[in-house]
Length: 385
Image 1 (cartoon, one colour):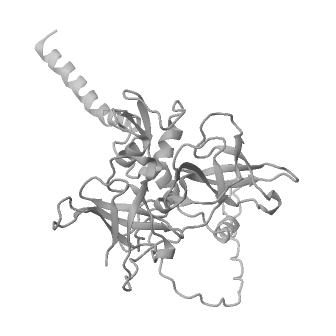
Image 2 (cartoon, rainbow, N blue to C red):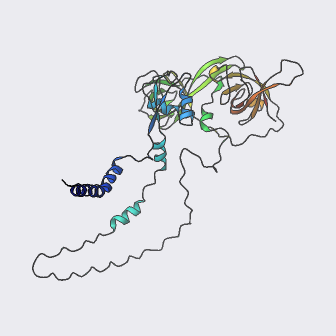
Image 3 (cartoon, rainbow, N blue to C red):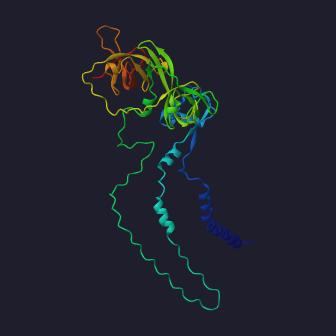
């Protein structure tokens, strides 16, 4: 083959490739996933010292979302027992965000008007040799006169708000609802209502599990009623009582006639729940939006215990104070946490600051807002004036 023939063949091949290139590119665009589509979930490898609370705080930006991680990883039977090296599937919040941002369905009236609109099709041409007579266009239907509707007041359309992220203009409480619900408290009461079992037998229960409960007056319970799930963790001598840890919330979903036990669904869990966990009627917490005025109050007390009885404590830990409503304590009060100097004449050592979340008659539960040093049981507190 001559050089000219080689050149001609090469030219034809090149031209064919150029002609086919757009089609090839379009096929690739259809088969390759869009780069903007986010992963629905991701893998996290547990390290020494990790807890589901800490992992939810770092990966989902909210520690109270840890039950979502637990539910996504069914191999974890006890959320308090996770081991270094194990792989966790971290669920994405994107599906929840999309569901909360989904546009509302069209109004039924719009659908009806659209369905009622006639569709006019062109007449089929005649196949006979005789020319078809022209078909006159149908006369327009007479307009239906409707009574004038009363003009509705003009309303500005509200912008779409994200369900999990608050707008900057939204007024935020000093302490969020779920922190208040999980705070725990000191109580002298006795309880008889409890969780007696579950639909699926297992050692630990959590979010979305179906359980059976026993209450003192089931005839007075209605479907949808909520109960706080809790457990006593220890006895306290001063002031005398039992330290209560909040585990979650459940809601009654089934009530058979004359049944001694009711069926309920766990709608929120802060910690692992088990058979025998106690119940109390749920009360919606009153959110705190401002620090109450001092009004000349002077309150000094001590920390009688700390949530989970840890020896090292800091910001976001819960403290239990030996002063309560009878002593003038109010929700939202700020207390200075300190210890007296070991040397006479020297100033007290400041350890941090705590804000009161829940008030009982003789005790109060406070959240550590900031800490300069380790806070421990027995440290002193003083109302900030």
